[in-house]
Image (tube, rainbow, N blue to C red):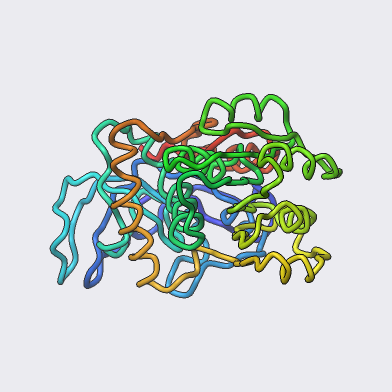
Length: 329
């Protein structure tokens, strides 16, 4: 099978397309012919040598989400049949024509979604739903703050939040991206850069002084203390990324006085049973919304697998709006 191989830590030029052995599904696994996948920050970091694949996954093939057709089933499987359309998450190896995954870590692709649309769904929507619903307990009427709202996870979260009845406020570094996000569940937002001083007053006005109940922070760095300052009493702040920096100075007294919950979360390196639970919750709560068109994947650009280096460059340029998708057909 063809696969995008990471030949050495470095830039996009270190990615090459090679023929490698096709995996065989083991007990409880299915073999999926990958029709589409997408890029994530984990893929960029893995290519740079800063985020190795978890144990048991290919160290030289990236890709943590996929959509495709079941081709065969390993021993002790019962949920799927050859020909079924599925999508899901994995610890790596999805930037290849075939991937072997646990049968409980995939869900059925809604009929209305094309392969390219389906490939843009799993990581963004499972991450967003797991962080803000399963873990943070977002409910109708609450204020949801999303940092980096124009990202794949950010746009999934904005749509899910709006569908749940939350009032969504997003931040982004581009006025154009904010205007586009306002059509995808975001009720208001702010253009932010290195100076976050305007964020506090904007959120004070948006929340009428009450503060933010749930924050989805995909950036970290200086955004964390800003989120703490903007949080409501008993607010929940979910840390999902550290693109803006891994260090921050915070006022612990604000966390104490507001009785805040500050929680980190990752998806890729979780134990198998937790991934199964996150996928099941996604299938229960999000698949009906996708099937009805109440939430939708947002595709920035599509690249064939042979142009995966250009796809990496696109994502690294911070110009994308939504998901950078790979056509694996």
